[in-house]
Length: 485
Image 1 (tube, rainbow, N blue to C red):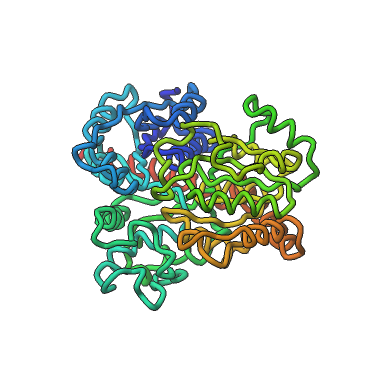
Image 2 (cartoon, helix red, strand yellow; image 1 turned 90 degrees about the horizontal axis):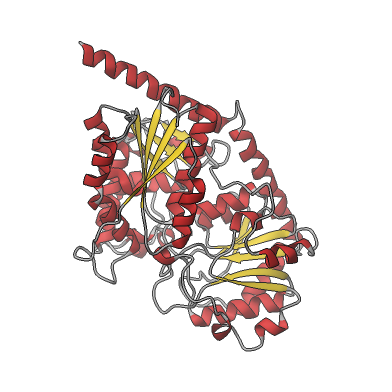
């Protein structure tokens, strides 16, 4: 890594593939477009093989990744503690190790970037006398809810899900009570207080980086620039839409899952629907059975990444993505694998998602609506079936179906009850073969081109990242001058 770079970004990432991947892509973008030296601090995880492999693959001479040893939080949480709370506690407990690692860097950082769960480390930027930023790896609509949540906490009485009217956020699309993020489902739970705390802390940075782009969410982004909206919480804090930051499709054929790609090569263009519910998503046994029958009844080609069913929460595999028993015959309907072997492939636990979505034979994505997956689908021009499970995915599903027009969803939300095979069949056929699906396909391809343009030199996201770099350099110069007086 060059010590001659004008800026050296230190980026703190929360554990979990959904957090690590966009941080890695941010680091790569800073290096490629802005000649910024980058060191990423990621909490190592002994339970996630996928995370460890991703870190090793991303490390380059210009991108240094420092693994912070995991902390023992067993005395601070119990086995039933929500994932959101566990992440917040983990990131709180690693602050001493992170501070020490920053102070012992060979090339001191000139700016600090933390992700959503790292906001308690923002004061370290002040200690080091460097600009500090928050990277929100999801949508502008999610950011609007987070930054306005301390106000909602004071104004709304009772549980949010029991409200009869949508939650109004000035300048933005209202949030339906049933779409609120998981931490807002129960105001007595610790994850709610952690959420409100983060909402208070986000504006304490010198700016916010967002994994979206100007043309995708213009109205919501405009609200952050209006001092009369959102209680003025962001008027002194620039928002930089710098996305879409996604993993690139490999230029050469992947060396893993060779049988899968052999099969894909033999399928017609845009004829395969890819079913994958993220690195942490799980289904109940009953819902998995209905999913299998729905795919079979649709008579469409499919690739289905399956994980053992669970009786726990929908995010039960969050900390164990890519691990577990690969034998799926015991929890799929009897005869399903035999009956569908000519039209479908069932892949246990994990598959190279972005390379599958980038293959010409794939024409639809049955997705949990995590923002990483959403952007990977959009940037490859693939329409979606929205199947939200946890976190902010219900908001994402609403955005995709009702505002962006690139997805369909079930009439009965999957988090409320089991969605039947007939409904699954209907959605698959609508996306893959029906006339309405062609309109959705055209729309997502428009957004694909829009995202590509935003990242090119002169595009909105390229320019936003340039403003971040130049702004950080100016702030550094000002602080040096003040220090000399």
